Image (cartoon, rainbow, N blue to C red):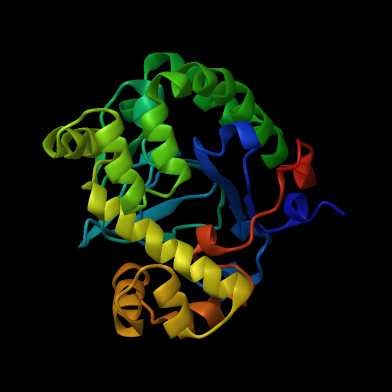
Length: 293
């Protein structure tokens, strides 16, 4: 059975050709979750270097925290969320269904020729963030018959655009593929004959963040996924991902995800509900009708 297609919350990997462009597709259906899945419709999206387009297919949602500050504003039905140093928190006004496309760091600016930093820690209507020629696709995604078709539409739309831009910005694509690890940053700077200042300026334009912030966020995510998949002691996982010690790793997890590693690991063993979707195991594209990754 197609587990992702029938799940109330699902995370789906992109096809291989889009791995450096799309982090994941996800969807959530509170209309199918008894009593809003036990969360009262609350969602917590931790800090991350990713931007995303989200479609509210049905229902209404209110943003209650952004940029480290309380807010109270209803979200648009098609929104663009920029990279964020602080968590986003939202709550359902009514039971809702949503579909999200999460971009890898640098991907949206490379595709749209629009810088990332003006959207740092912000959520805006998607047409305000994306070029005019993307608007028909945004609406086609909203009107698609189901989430499986939305994945297909997204891959069809993004595939040729990414194939055209990626070879021209290969240094940045390689950084994404290597999760922005420090050694490759140094290799990239030397190989491109860039100054450190030029690299940092370009990194901020393409990610909205400093290069060190992107590396730190992705390292913490990779370490948690390693702990989820392979177990082992916190100290061993911390050491294998370059942390000074277990306490250093624990501080980063608490700073970015609001919980210590042991609590996060327990949460990831529970049915998905209020967030942390990108830390969960992803379905292959083959499970929703596309090519397996």
